[in-house]
Image 1 (cartoon, rainbow, N blue to C red):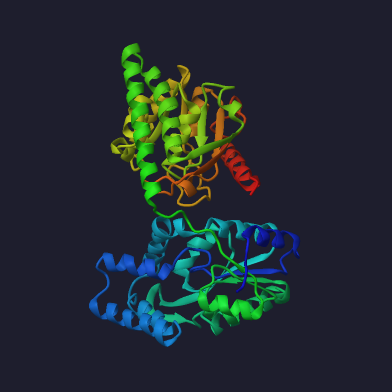
Image 2 (image 1 turned 45 degrees about the horizontal axis):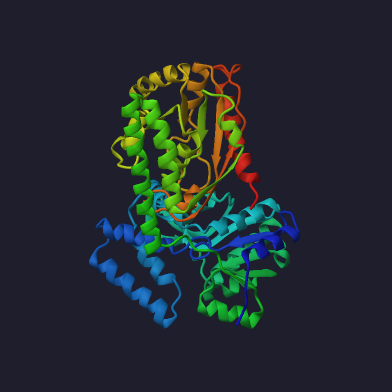
Length: 479
């Protein structure tokens, strides 16, 4: 049996091996970079929305059977899927691809796959995604992972309208191997020094094109092939699965939060002070909730939370868990800004009331600016402000563009800005999930940034500068 090598050994191999752009790193997509198959997610989405008729459903089932039981390649299945898209615009399908990435696929990227892609990029390698998937399925993932080159099955269109046919070969089996070979010739990549990653038996020819084939999460057939050919096998850690323990601990976490808020409100009523209620609820509720879920905080620069208050605290937003983390860190004398939809969120509503959070309508810029006006007064009165400059949760660890609202508020109030960089909350509680897995959330609180030299004219530069601090901190975090 082929031994399974540790992913850290593979990362060390990449770091110690040959460097530079003449070394290629080719990644299969479905089952290799992501846990599952994007085509299945697209099919499910279309099926539940009523887009798939009986004929397409039957043809799809037949071709899946032919692949699984008769060893057919993917050609007929792709033809059925693309044929159903004939007549739709490229723009429409691109929008669907972005939405599917954000809501369905992003959470399925293996965390260790991100580490592996980063290791190749750090080594200066030429990194490419090589897949039988279409550009609509894979482009958003490649962009999120900073993979520049896409070798995919291209879809034919005429004046922006899909014809339902492929343009060129389907990159499956021999087609993928040929595409990688041609790409290497065109880009000066030395295949003998290069890496390739795949998970299925159909990837044997593709993996054989390079000197360093590395099956990732291989199926039974590819595992057997790897054993015969002496290829090292690696398995990436899957995302945390739903377990009874996770459900129980998550329920206990919400109970702990509720208990903390209840105690806080009681103390606030006794003292006739909303600030007392917030301080107790943040400290007790946050710590009880995190402890019940089995979540620890590993905080670097904790002293920076207290050296310059009031301040505008800005954080990168991946998860609802951020609310608990920030409450446990900031503890007292703060307010915040959040989208209006959270005003009715059962987890967030009570905290929002205690912190006197400003709920804004992101679709109405005039109303949003009016809602932010009291935040400046709060800062001037001594209360800090916490805000996510991305404006919404990122579906992945990748930082979204920053909006300028928090920067305007810091400028108007004349208070420092303090970046709070959260590394992995999204792995412990993924976006759109209500379940919290045990683990350690890593946080870096950067030193306060003076704003006395900020002006409206140079504010864009300050936004770029602060976002760069987040990017540098996330990039330099020890693996």
